[in-house]
Image (cartoon, rainbow, N blue to C red):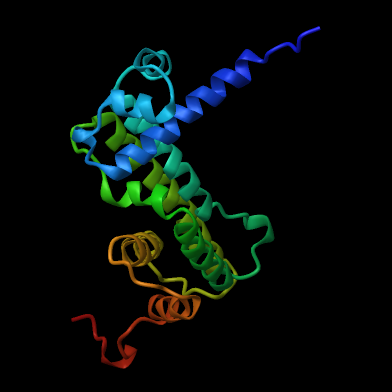
Amino acid sequence: MAPVKNNKNQNSSKRDQILHAAVDKFLEKDFYQVTVTEIAELAGVGKGTVYEYFSSKEELFKESFSYCAGIYLQTFKINFAELASARITMEDILVTHLNLIKENRNKLHLLFNERPQNLKELQAWILEQRRELLNELTGLISEGIRLGEVRSDLNVDMAARLFLALNQQVIGEMVLLDNIAVEEAQLKELLDLYWNGIGKSALWQGH
């Protein structure tokens, strides 16, 4: 008897083929230069098959972006039940983040280098994910206050935004856009700058 084919798995596999091909094409060229025909050819399917899974090139880009972002967002998922130190957790996040970028350089480059401004649905999704990240990080810093590691008068929201910027705008852009070979030792320096500040507190008089 011939084996029964799993259509669900086949469909999922074909969709993934198309999605991965789209990621590759959007990394290779500007969003507006990529065609659905090119994506179909790279995926090894007909153009009509692409439209069976994705209604438009815009949806394909959104799904490509979401796929890459899903990999990225896992870096910031924090288990507070096991949290013993906010500082050590931040170190772990920085190291995990750096390794993730290095191991998924091409996929994550899409997050930092390609965001068509007219895709309003995508922009709304990005903002929602950013809010989720900030909620995770404000929770981490609040836990640091509870543990006595972080001063209680700190602006938690501002501190969370700075730590997110350290990961995205500093480390992410250094590696992906500026091609700087960031090592773990440098992460400690960056965290020290964040944790301790760069000024002498005695000189800060609220000016």
